[in-house]
Each structure stands twice: as C-alpha cells, then as structure tokens.
Length: 305
Image 1 (cartoon, rainbow, N blue to C red):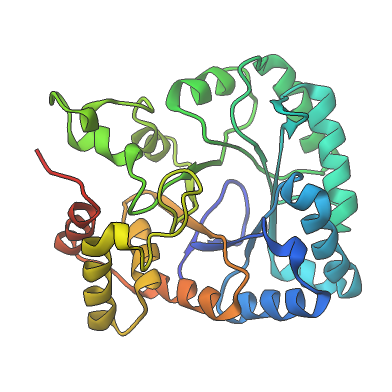
Image 2 (image 1 turned 60 degrees about the vertical axis):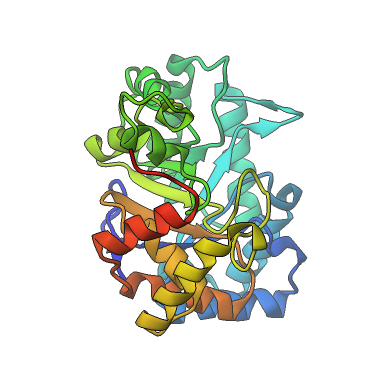
C-alpha cells in the first residue's frame, strides 16, 4: 500500500480509501470482517457522509467502534455534510449541528477530515469560516475539505478561511473523464475541449490538495460499472490485457489508472465485498506506464487531438 499526506495529519493515509455509502445494509459481523480486511490490506481511510443510509451507515460503523474503541487509533475517519431536505446548506448552524450528529453516530470525539458535500449556491464564506473555526478550536475536526467544487468556488471559499482546504472529492473514472478532457483538448473545436471545471485538477495540484475520486468504476452519473460492460468493450479488452500483464484483475487496473495521475490521488471505493476491496488495495502496487495510461484513456472512447 502507498500513502499520501492529508492536511495536518501526522500519519499518512492510504491511497485507497473505503467509501461507506453502502454499508448500512451489512450485518455487524459483515462490517467487522470488511473493516479488518481493509486494515489487513493496508487501507486505513474510511469515508462517510451524514446522508449515507440516512445516517445508518455511520450508526453501524459507530457500533463497531464502540465495541472496540482501540480501532479508532488504527484508522482515519472522514465524513461529509451539507445535503438535506433536497438542498445544499453551508450555514454555520447546519454545519455545527451536522458534525455533532456525525460524532454521536460514529461514537467518536473528533473527525480527521470533514468535507462540505457538493457546492451550495448560497454559500457565505464568512459563515463557513465561523463554523470551521468553532470546530477546529473545539477539537471536533482536524482537517477540512470540499467535494465536487471547481477552482473558483474553492478560491471564493478559501479567501475567507483561516485554514487550508486539504481535500477535493470529485467523480472520476476511466469512463468519466471531463476533468481531464478539457486539459488535453486545449484550443480545439470539439466538445471535449469545453473546460467544464475551470482546470480543477491542475488547481488541486497547485494547492497540494488531495484529490479523492468517487465512483471510480462508474460510467456517467451512477450509470453502473464499466467493468464487463458491453458498452465499453475496447476499454475492457485493454484492462483485461493489462490485468494479465500485471497479474491482477481488471478492476485493479482501473483503480491504478486513477492513481497514475500525478496529483495527490486517493481512490474512494464503493464496494462492500471484501475480495473486491483486496483487489482495490493491489492497485497501489501497479504502476502503469505513460503509454498504458493513454492506452486506457483512448480505449474509453477518447480521441487525442
């Protein structure tokens, strides 16, 4: 496993993180086995959100931690807040209330990282700063970040913050590459040249932010996995070929493709299957060549200018 430094955390976090959106349907025994599989594989980062399972995902995870408090020192916990009642809410009142609920459900006293969950069009950066300052001074949150924000939204928020944002969590996969396409097709008269995100990946690199990729095996917006999909035959042929070369599975190669991008990359998985989690962990040991990275990119239907 490889690790990356996140914000002010002394111990680095694994480049593969466990997304906990779907764990609410697991039994206590299944979750215990799943978490230990992660830790045994070198994965120490667990990503939550207060809306996952309507809070049940955090509650189930919290029961595991309350039953074995020593586990808390072996892992890093991140959660997200802002989505409720069919809207996004960055108000100080909601952020503070949300964090108290998260900590209660997880049975912990602090979060290693808190992300604002999707952009709030009505964001008041000064109010967010007040909330973050309160959480930082109380010791309830060690690091802060955002999700699905572009460069200028981050700059607008950061201008009023007294802390650096450590994370931007973004959808990205071999079959979902708008973050990359615009940068490759600069000054071209094609749809791929449209800069939809204001150079967000490059900006995160400049600011030393960890880029956390969600839905790393998805096509489109929750359109299902591209692994084994007839819609992506050429991509799967390339992934299968590389999987055979490196002695891993095709999903491992898909994760490794994301990690090959030269930023502080962290893949957030969505599986609840221990064996698939092991496959993900192996991606940290697969270093694709530049040629192989572009081969995967083209096989997904992208053309180079």
